[in-house]
Length: 452
Image 1 (tube, rainbow, N blue to C red):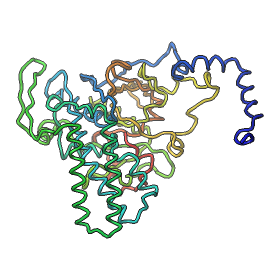
Image 2: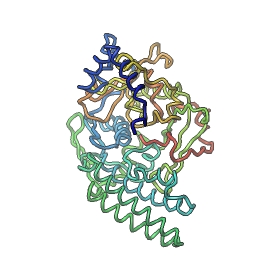
Image 3: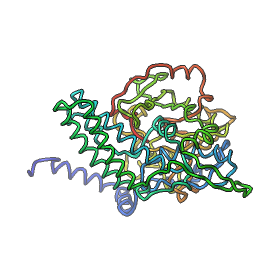
Image 4: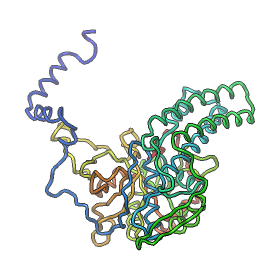
């Protein structure tokens, strides 16, 4: 094996080249003792500021998803609570994240068991790309906008004071691992039943028994959501109010939907790959969480339009749900997302971020990983082409950034924001007409199927 791998002469060449530059040794001394991003971070006099020219009022408390991947749920409920709190004239409020999380776990498992039955009937091999993709993480915490519409329109919402967080919601790894174990076991059973010619009725009965097990696991971990509840609260004038008994769905329909209608929102994406032209509708195969629910639909637009629609919403006092690749060029401690914040070349002698946005999608370098809320923007001369920075409400608590809020440079928005959700009233009629087109189906493993 002495001559296998990289030749010794080449390794010696690498070593000599490394040691010939004293800066490499300095970088090594620094980076071996701390996160290398700290060494790459530029401590600049002109660091991007947190003030913005247009801002939606901050809401309290700053939410915290803790050790879970529920950002998409938190982002929705953070967007939703802003107009709701204004309507109810209250200072602090959160919707129950645990409530939507409970229903997503159940609905998504039921959806996936049906999908696995479909693909088994189609003769898809268990070790093929599709089935292996579906089994990668059956109990995924993340999601997309149309999945939220499915959940809220069917199950409604409730105040957090009426159903609080469970340990397995804030620390979801073990519960998800248990559900994943069962879902893969159930997949094996379904494929065997299909192979032996079981009837549709027998398969349906089997899935119902499987879902009874999933229901038991989720209920033990998260609790059993109330069928009705009573919400008591004080408004800003310290006046007492009482709502209920009322169902979560009635609560949404009567109190929330008049100020935040899920069905009036549109998910606009920026997918610049040449094979996916703008002004078209897209969906992703088997990307859903509810049988008979809405498809996950994307209206593809240039990035300038995403910024225009988001800024228009903010100027009308509406926060904006959005999906991004949060970990790129991001300083967690300062809460700054800026392409100019890190100098990799100074530390490592090489640059990063050299691919185009389209190529990053194609080569697996970037995709949606996190959902947050846009709450402010700085525009020069009220011109979106001169936007400078954005204010972002995160769901990681109030210890990082500006008490839980982040600052996003406009250059970061261009490269790492992939979707925004805005009300239809902010979108021109000719673009809304695209919603009438039939959506083109992308494969299940397409990067646009990533869950925020």
